Length: 353
Image (cartoon, rainbow, N blue to C red; front, side):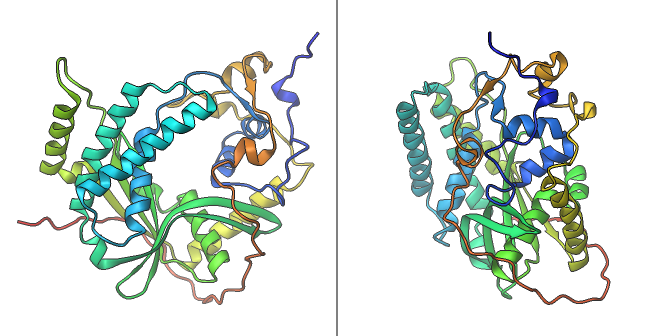
């Protein structure tokens, strides 16, 4: 008889360690939200079911990566080619892994991405005059306080006055500017990436350019062809691009980063201590998004969950696999003066007449 695995008995997996395998920003956010949920994730448990479509976001990121790597204004044809390449690679990967892809959904997402990204680069054409992109989709692995930190930064660029900024792209269906402006001053991911980049390069970034692309929820009307729908969406975006594209500049002062490092040090001390208590956070069970482990925790049984096999890297870091790096910790000279907290601001583009 198979023994029942209970969530309240789950703890750190034997094949995972903070110094060898490391932590990502999403893992820290899970730790802050619910330690038990992170333990279930680390042990490879997940709720089976149809995957949520993320093709639009992936297509947008893929296109941004390829275009900004050239530092040249793209043509509509080249944008469509990038999206076609992503689509073909996705179909090929699905066949190799035996995953059945919904062709109509993939084609719909590709049409949406084409209409959106062509208008995006038209709207932000000035980027290629005012920014020099140094790299895109950069994978990093750095050590901080005895814990390996890993992740992927969307882009890094220099302004005309040689100032270094990081760039984060998001696709969202709902955009609340008032909330974003307040949250960006505290954003964990932004500061996590800035600290990692500083450790790796020895140079501090000015901050993060937070770039949001709206993922429209508009669907095909009855009798409407995909081409007609795509052209209509493109026309809608062209008439009101500021509804679809939002850009926020989030600078961080040395004092803000110093405070974040202090908080990160406390968190690393917790995750690398094998005696740290693991407990659930009932406040994280529901809300806007229900925790995928709710059924398992409420019944105190993992019977409703499936479990991934393989190493921690295969289970958790398949998109973040990079060659082993040297210890990137470097001393950075800092001013001792206290500075005021900076505030994120919305960047509005002047439209051509």
